[in-house]
Length: 494
DNA sequence: AAAAAAC
Image 1 (tube, rainbow, N blue to C red):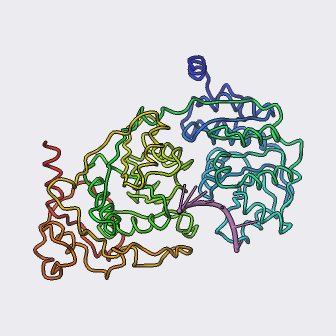
Image 2 (cartoon, chains in turn purple, red):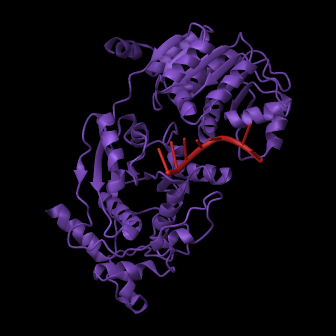
Image 3 (tube, rainbow, N blue to C red):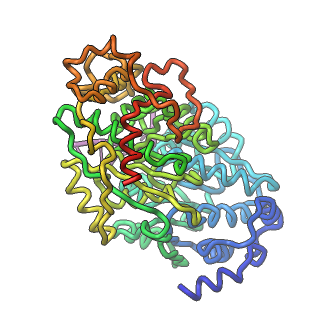
């Protein structure tokens, strides 16, 4: 550890013998010192050796293969339909991210590339391939699809990269990966990256890598170091109300963070819940948008770009966004559900507290998630601190409804799941119902409509500064019943 | 039990 650290401190990018044009791009990007994995992997890759990198995101893994690749590919030219290198990534977003990395560091080098991912038309991808590409970046499914159409020849691939291999394993891509390995020349160079070395990954590397340089990077500061964690144990007042009450709790937790919250990712276990939570937050005036695999690729891209640019404050996500995505500077991660794979917890909260910044990760745990919480704590080897439910004292947890947030607008393509009972109720105005909650009256009996204007409102809710792009917000908008805020003040004071 | 990825 110490040795690597010292060595890393002494090594500069300029010591690594990268091509002058690559070096220029690095200088312009403002980087001088490589990360440990870059310092170790780049020299080996430049020598033409296979590399087995065991590292997580945030370690500079992507540049550890793009930089030597650009250097090596700077000479020579691709023939039509015969890419000279191939990068495989498990998700479309990750593939797109790798492509951006090439754009950044190959800007002074004449290098052609194509991004082959699903969800977009074949036509443009075909045209690029026909012209010949130096770098092909792809998700496995779409790559094989192109190959089977006979549009693509892999016999000139000199460098092959497999990124996030353990994720590929989780997603059942290993047979595809093996097939692709069988389609590229035996003499290629292979750069292979995985966050962990599961037995199956070990087997693949033994089969397809040749005397690799093994580069292992200590896990980034584990969860505990820079990320403040907490979990709220929560049970709905009634089973059929738990879902909407949980969303109310989420809003309260968000609000309680005040100005400390600049932006956040909210993870849900199910795509349907991603939609419901995003819709609900939007309805209550929060600047939120969903991302998961059932949404159009164009929408996924737009949402992610907006979030990166700071135009979007809350990203409600499935685990499509848990790993690998480079989203700089997220102040908070909320786990609306406890992830059922405990490793995913580490990946999810790893979206915050990056690059030495402080981060906060807050989770909600309902009774049925308690077994998962135990698994998470077993993995962390420590207890996640319990947080008080900000709504617990003095305020009834009953009767908060999103007004059928989930029922409005289009449902995701494949989601035929029946929404929860509460949300299926006729879409009444949320402010009325929240006000009902303030009065501690069961929603069903409340004369909602006429009470709307009497709703006590806090003029300023503090935390939100994002734009509400949806001008048709039906919900509370800027208004927040004062009881919620009051209970916080009381809580903070006490 | 679910998410991701191919049409």
